[in-house]
Image 1 (cartoon, rainbow, N blue to C red):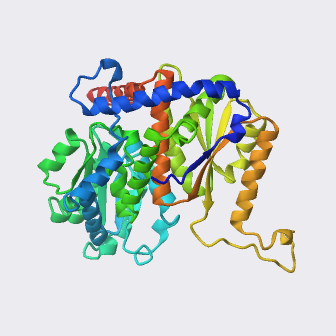
Image 2 (tube, rainbow, N blue to C red):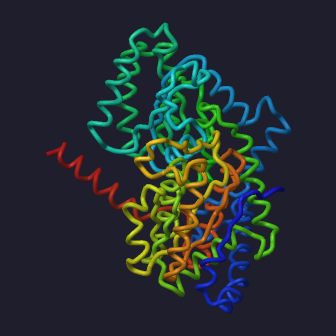
Image 3 (cartoon, rainbow, N blue to C red):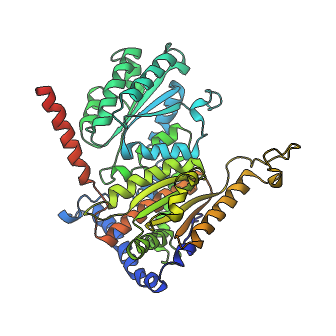
Amino acid sequence: MTITLRYNASAASKLLDHRQFKRIESSILAARKKVLEEVELATSSSSIATSKQPLDAGFIDLPRQLLDEDANDSSHSLMAHIEGAAADLHQNVDQLVLLGIGGSYMGARALMEALCHPFHNELNRDERNGVPRLYFGGNNIDNDSINNLLHLLKRRCQDKSDVRQRWGIVVISKSGETLESAVAFRLFRRAFEEYYGFESVESRNLVVFITGDSGNLREFAAAAQHPVVLPIPDAVGGRFSVLTAVGLFPAAVLGIDVRKLLYGAADMTDCFRTASFAENPVLQFTAVCHLAERKQNCTIRVLSTWGQRLEGLGLWYDQLLSESLGKNEVGATPITVVNTRDLHSRGQQHQEGVRDKLITNLIVERPSTEPIVLPNRPDDCDQLNRLSGKTVPDLMSAAIAGTNKAYADVGRPTADIILPKLDEYCLGQLLQMLMLATVVEGQLIGVNPYGQPGVEAYKANTMHILTRRKEG
């Protein structure tokens, strides 16, 4: 077990009472114990109390379980199934449309933005090494975005014998009943069948379903004899599903090393289980966030991503924290910012606005590409020669340090999550850390972090209004 992710809350800790930090240790350790007990309960044959339902703790041990299954039977494991289906799509399509909403797409988006070329869809097929372009749909009821993507596919795909003009669909929904993704699937399926032919081989083989063990989507896939149907485990909720087929299959299609993602997550879980309070990034992160909220009224948590490749991960975390803890009129409000971009928009508020924010910087120490050096110019019209020879990462490091000092000078709490580099192993650690911290905090504040009963009201009202209008 090698945890390369580091959590440094020394700046925030200076603003917290050391005695309070020491006192909360026992509560945090007790919360960890309860989380792990729920893992055992979820996999046992014991009845689960109503107060603990839903109990979607399956994500905690899943990374290690998938790796062990693959090690024991590499030809029949879920990982083999995922990678085989991804390889088939590589050979047969050049555009892939992922239809899903919430946890059914935000994890895949986060993985793509963090680990793929930032202009992946602009590259030609050779430059992408045969990896398909990936487009996200079904995440909004937006007439124009649906139409424009359908029109793009129609313009780009006119000869189905040419792999560069072939497209496929991945539809992700645990129940198959979510309005946004169900509407999108019906619309894209119509276009798909018009292009390939109704009940053609392509119309079956080039659609991948990722869904629960029962429900509308699984029944449809079985009735239409679609060969690739990947599972969403019953014991894993949508916003915790990034390391199931929901996130792993799109990642595999994109050429991301999904095993390294799982190793990172599994190692973080091992650390969470066994490391002391002082050496445990999950527990330290939870403690600082909880104390800042309870003792300093920091009810807004700003995840400040330095560089643009982690914005999608921040939006994924927004859903994770909001839906998990925003219940019973409690729960912090997450906000994602991208710096240095948002220093020119939100920076003023963070520096001098209401003192209700804990800022957690998400920092990648080393860039994935060769550092760009600022050149010297004879005209020096921009007066930047004084910085010539410095690299773009040098400028970013100075901006991070300067911003943290500005906040510290006026008593604004900050902490840092530091990744040595942005790769699959580090990202797997980060994803699992944030999910584990969320469920631990649920125990601290007396909230079931699983399920999202509050979103059912709008769904029911929307469908009632739509069906009433149709009947009228």
